[in-house]
Length: 448
Image (cartoon, rainbow, N blue to C red; front, top):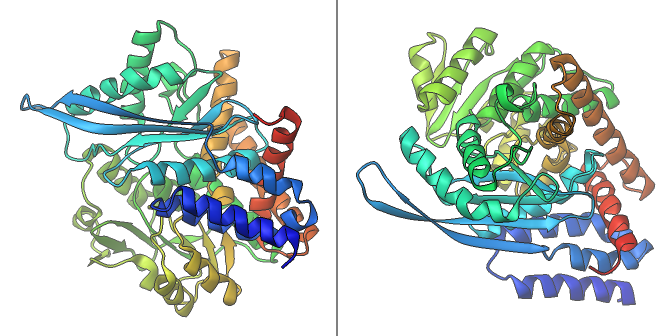
């Protein structure tokens, strides 16, 4: 074993020894480590930088007490992991979900580092959230929780320090309550959160950005392969913001969105969803906040499959847009058996490492999350720019910039992959391109 190989093995062992119980974080690190090995072998100084990068600059955990509608005290746990400020203020969303723990937030912050770097915008990386579940809670209860959460978080954020945004279960309602409490505590009105309402500092296209961006990324990949989205049958998981706008943009570009899902099952429109049907899904999930099975009362052609995943549907492309690790090795084999030729990740790390190996072994086009779903944070960065200017750009201007950013991400990932002799391995290329920009900044800024 060469000296470099020994050092690589030593660093990997050290990371696992330090956080042996953080499964999601270690999974994310392992996925990136494999891709970066050619970089470390060519220039060992980058291995030392990576060893620093995997340790967050700051990890914050705090108590969030609040009173529910029955007058009973509730206590949740809040987190903010500020991973890297090498390229700019910490930037990344807040997730409210019962599965949230430090490992989940660290993996998200780690992935965010590469994603934000790939956008070409000057943003560092962070992630936060809580094990609070807003589903089934009244607006007053959600407000009470958000205000208590911000009572601690506000000490650690700012327009030039750390700019959170939304993520799973943190939408316009939650961002509004969080921003109101921040303004009350800090006594200033700044762009400290993104994903805001258009009437008080938000950006056009921000709600659509992750879904639209993922489809733009797929469009670029297919174009590179001499193909297009037109007529492609697409399975989509999830039924939240990302899934909704993935379906909408697929439809606009001539593809056929077939499915939406939630944790209880999936709904299939055999001939594909129309815009009217997508609008109804948006109403069910964004306004009524009910299960996707309720959609069947609206459509005579819909089929609902309780307890199932949409990967069993015959299709050309898959857009996992729900949550991490929703596609395991067996799911990936089912996708391939059903004719899927491309997987583009709208969610964060929805495919296990074993699933990714299946994609590669069958030459399935793979758009990894840190590249394919970077549209959301890209438009968040554009929202920050608009807030600094005290201006709001047109829908057309923001969408054009988003489309260009996603094209640049694909091309930069492809170029990095080819530079290191990995042909068109977009997963490896995204990791390499994202890492090198952050790593070079860290080298220039010294051992801090």
